[in-house]
Image 1: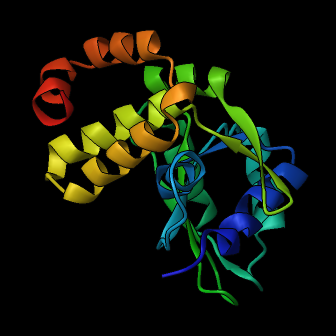
Image 2 (image 1 turned 180 degrees about the vertical axis):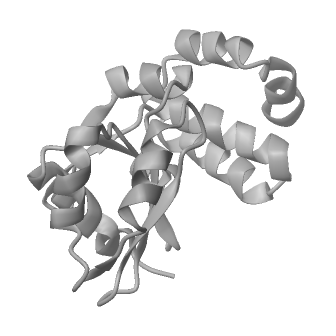
Length: 185
């Protein structure tokens, strides 16, 4: 496991390449709740064909594992659930890259992403409501209690930052209201 600040190599390089992104998952959870170790950084990335060459340049083969170009292209063109990894050879840290695709929740969150100063690095982060919805979806799929713990910590620590109207709207839109009431009432 790694400290979240070790993961910042990925957003810093995306920013330098002019490729828009937003941090999600455990890194967003750290921003909205409390520090903890993590295995990777999740990044939703607006990756168009013209960006792929720049991506390959900033994550060069001497420093990073990057899948073959054709894999990146195929994943970037998927409407939903596109995904590939980038691994830093030196630090052993991994980024889960999720191309924006046609996913409506990703598109909504991308328009609402927020900037945070994290250890002196400006980081684009998905809105807290998005992080809660995604963690609830992951819980629904795999029943991992860590997602519920993360949600409860976010509610406790970032409660004032949460737009509860938007959250309720998104819960209804993604058919999660009943699960939300059952688990977190």
